[in-house]
Length: 254
Image (cartoon, rainbow, N blue to C red; front, side, top):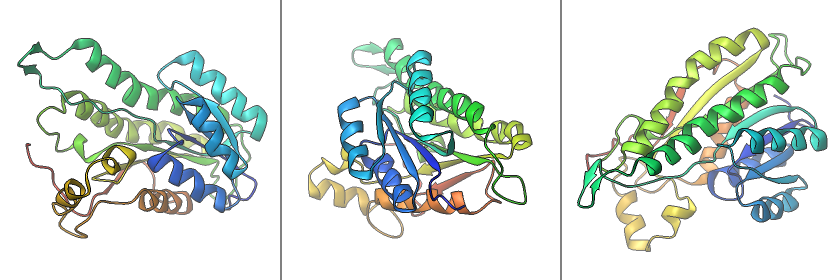
């Protein structure tokens, strides 16, 4: 897909995989809207790319709708949407302090799953008004972010795995429904990626984690996630599926 002067919208794009994705899309000529809960960081990141930075709580209907309206008003309806916003929580279902805090579980579901659906529904409503850009009638693509934890959740990842499993399950029905409008839906399930969370760990810990990956024996880079996003954008036959980006790792129970 030719992204020159097209609008791309990326959530969670002030850092990590979202930031790398925004940079890659901007390098291809896209007008990028960076959405992030940290509005100041979103504006700073967008300023470097000549884009628009918008504060947004993806789990909140009004906040997300206002952010989409602002992005469309500034740059036009999106042709590419990538949802990277998410949070992680480690807590046992029954731990030393008792049962898993229900509000914490709900928060992870709200951000990771409901937030992903929230952006998908709002973006699709705007994307379907776009002109087609291919003989097949393509209008755009929405790419969501899951995790290998959707398949091999570890002890303490009940909330996180539930939320990412929901994103995986959302992919096919969304793609089937939006196909009539020429909108594709794909999901990427990353493994161990050097995001700010992992990047803040001591180097020896990062090396230990990376050694668990069959090949290459290292943490993945945000730029590799962005590269896969670019391929999905370009390859029209990729639709309704989940691609693992994990170096063949299969997570152990602990």
